[in-house]
Image 1: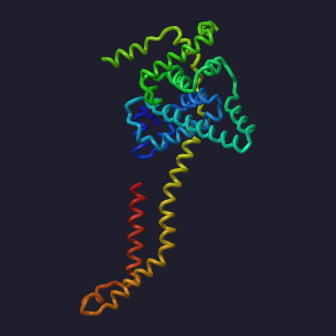
Image 2: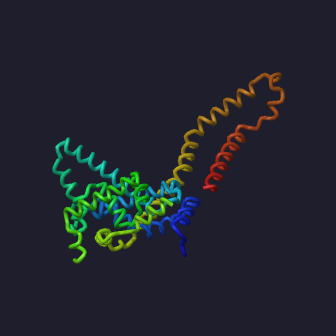
Image 3: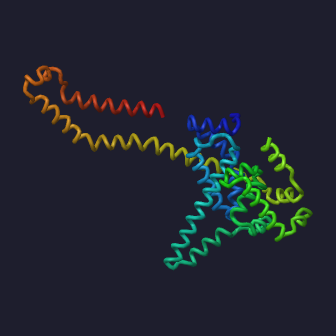
Length: 183
Length: 119
């Protein structure tokens, strides 16, 4: 079956709860969402779990998508919120474990979250704050415009620009980017 | 006009931007059943939602049947025991208790069938 544009699929899902159309939307955008969450969390399996939660939420909230911005921008907004909420939850969990004297367990969880291959990009991302990481990934990995990032992160466009500027500055001072250009 | 200028400014990328783009560029992640898993979860969720309401109604009806029948019977007996000059034609017009209860049940089932068909 030939599927149309994203907004046509969204309309089908909202009007007749077409799960096949939603499946097609997932197939189209799962790579971006999973990549975004992998880069943000640094843990592949945790990121994939978060991506599943993100798409489940997207299903519930699809009627709120107005069709003004790009669909991937809207999805990444949900992905970012899902990530922040899960982080808050795991932080609370770590605090509770610490309170009851299971600090080592809490620590091991944090280590698992950070465990994965550390390539060049991971080193770049490590110098950035969480907010800068999210904005930089949205901009350079997902190709979102400043306006779309602003909508996804609920930040004014000016702040998005300054976060990108700050992120680039940090990467520039920590690494020689031009070296990477030539291998 | 202003937004066009902003978009143009965004599109002008320097060498550093291009390097960053290539650094952030990752190979697309293969679906490998990821979307199928989510669709399955959604279908299960929808199915549970569809089944839960009629099941709850059925259970509610089963639980409420005896007290409801008692109430209907009480009202029915009360109406029948009223003096004839107060409700002169009542005795002849009231249907039997079984007909009232069966009618109510048919009405409830029909309403739920309609709402399910609408879904």
